[in-house]
Length: 147
Image (cartoon, rainbow, N blue to C red; front, side, top):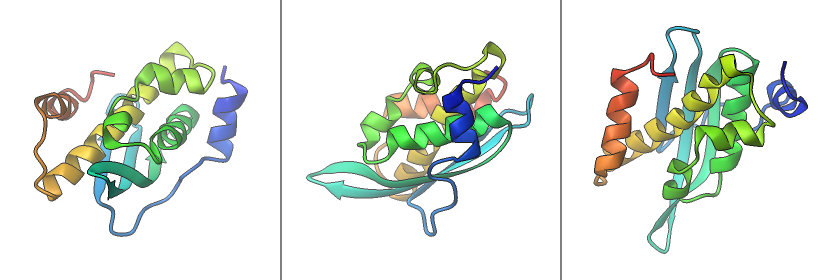
């Protein structure tokens, strides 16, 4: 059912834990399956580019939820915020060698966790929130059954 890469990220997740005094925290969940993810980010600015210097997660959920959380943090770490926001659900699934159709929603949750962490960071630091980011945030908070 699961690829070796999914099982590897499930049994030995990367970047698991919590960042003390994070710059942003994203909490997302799917009430249908019960998965809940927290994504914590630490951001540094280099040449006016905001870089995700550190990223960690805590996830309550199935093997796919933990594996996608681990993978999305690998993909976002060291990237600019814009690059991290560009990580797609398909990219997360592909990097894991695929997900069963019934578990694809986990890759959606993982990317939404990044969106919410960045949104939180921007809000706390009074950084202008783009129309696109605001729309993504509103969709996440208003439609938790969308996955």
